[in-house]
Length: 291
Ligand SMILES: Nc1nc2c(ncn2[C@@H]2O[C@H](COP(=O)(O)OP(=O)(O)OP(=O)(O)O)[C@@H](O)[C@H]2O)c(=O)[nH]1
Ligand SMILES: [Mg+2]
Image (tube, rainbow, N blue to C red; front, side, top):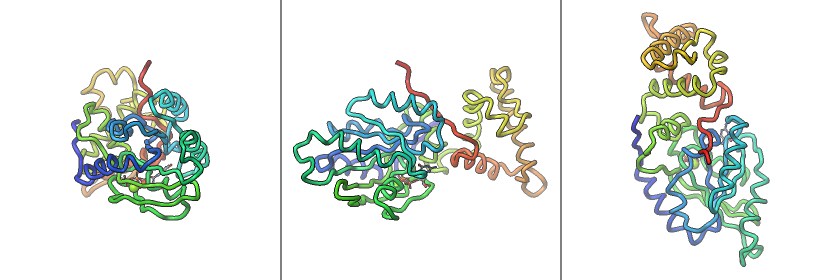
């Protein structure tokens, strides 16, 4: 699946980040803890120059906690980078952010004389505006469960220690690895209209069968034979078994159109929504690179 999506406002934001670099002390890059590399923007390090980056692994309430520990350790080995695992929804670990910004800025000559200026950046829908609201208290920035929601810059004084700047989400032009595009789409960082929902359901089921086979039976029932390793070897047989079982599963749940046929649009939206909101369970879509 080849994914291309780069609206004009993202190009503008890219320029803005570059232009604001000298006025910012530290960049807070929010990534989705379920796919921290796919949601980290590879352009960012070149945009922010030598400024420090704090990677905030957000939505930890939705990810696989074992994989999260490995990701945190991996990010801490990256240049100019410190990482922190948080959940804006559950307000988990947010007070620790102050300690981390302090540690990163303490050696600067202006430290203690003025507020730390931090810019929140990241791909769409990872929770940048939600983070700003959680830190500032109250509803300062609008949020939505869809990508490309924030359009302009927003500055907020959090307290006498921190100034925050929220930015619209930015993507990069072309995803060289198609798996990255699929992960971004599964997490809702790419508009749903860009990829077919049924293709995404197939990719999600393939991933679950490979990485979390035991969860498949819990989610889709014991009839989900497409998660059996033997069947998984042969792609046409695997896909045939997948659609046949999902058809029965959808019918049982009353997802029907006129004539008693399964409503595939409704079924795929329901499967994707259950995955995105954590109703299916806690999953991580990728593990840290080896080495
Ligand atoms: N489960 C969960 N949901 C979260 C968390 N943080 C944010 N969200 C949800 O993620 C969705 C996107 O949040 P936003 O804050 O609008 O994301 P954004 O990064 O500002 O998105 P753009 O402005 O489109 O770039 C919203 O539905 C939030 O409620 C979290 O820690 N856990
Ligand atoms: Mg936003």
